Amino acid sequence: MYWNRLDDMLKARYGTKVYKLALSSGCSCPNRDGTLGTRGCIFCDGAGAFAETGSISVQLEAARERVAAKSGPNARYIAYFQSFTNTYGPVERLRALYTAAMAPEDVVALSVATRPDCLPQPVLELLQACAAIKPVWVELGLQTIHSQTAAYLRRGYGLPVYDWAVEQLNAIGVTVVTHQILGLPGETVEMMAETARYIGRSGAGGIKFHLLHILRGTDLAADWQAGNVPVMDLEAYITALEICVRSIPRSMIIHRLTGDGAKRDLLAPAWSGDKKRVLNAIHHAFLRDNVEQGSDF
Image (tube, rainbow, N blue to C red):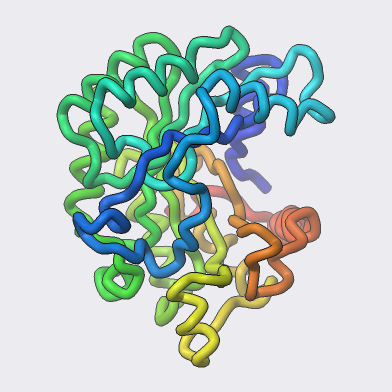
């Protein structure tokens, strides 16, 4: 049994557990501000308001306090701009945000979630400059390689745009982490495996697997309530996940094995709300089934 866990990589590199500190950049998204659309991707609930919740230093301190009970005095952190499109804005404003986030000595890396179609040349140059100081990860929400599903999601860009973004980011020394959603409407397990294999060949250094879950207030919720969107049970998700893990290269870092929304907004599947139980079930199944990452890549 083997899968290449992010925690293991970070502990080997830094000698201690590394925690993510979620930050707000105050950026919007072209799928929400009218550039491409106004309602976002079909699964997006719009959580994490566009406005900042204080300066970066204030946000960092608040985020440290949230993990203080488990982090310990010698913990290290990753500054993580998570919600919406965190390269979507004036480059000088982004420069100030990224610089402030990377400044503390206990922050060992910068992680920036964005869209592949929001990486203009000035932003690439900024990311390159940041990567010369500390490691930089850019997270790209691909979700699927299948065009019909992508259209349903209202993703708003084609697969060649993702390929271009990965190539550009690799060229400037930035690590790409790609998101994939398992259980998208109409997709078979083999289609999910095809997406995983594609990500594995794309040049991405890491992958995040997410379960399709239904959040209150999303357009996806309306489709689900109308009976048009089935959701996976836990065993079906684990089966698909195992196949996808076997379908990516052994060297690729797995940053996440499942995704979960805020419990207060979760409509389905109910089992996904118990994250500890879900992760325990995944780990038990991987052991039972002797899952070897890369065995089918």
